Image (tube, rainbow, N blue to C red; front, top):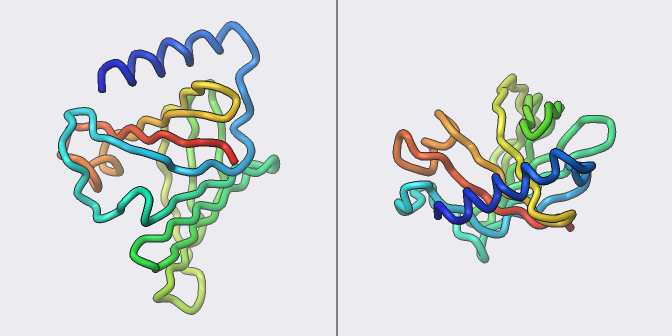
Length: 145
């Protein structure tokens, strides 16, 4: 796991001297891990369940997660500050709700490009603690569609 973090940071730093790939587009979650190598405890299974995030040119996003056949969509806006991406959710709707539910939730991720079509994000704090033991970061690997 330390190799993945170091590789991600090293490659991301190399993009600091060149134009970084675009965050815009649709990204598919392909793997994830807790930094302590603890088992992820949120019930999502890569390969059976899916997560996609679409970052649009107008700085809006749509997050679509399907777990156990139940799809949840979250929409909102995002800002980019170097390798830090801040998402502010405006609404959420799951398979159990007829209409979108307003929300105002903001969180930031460290976004490290491995190539034009591959990235690793690092999520910390309360959001990471939803999947990993307290104090761990959640590493997520995405492929651009």
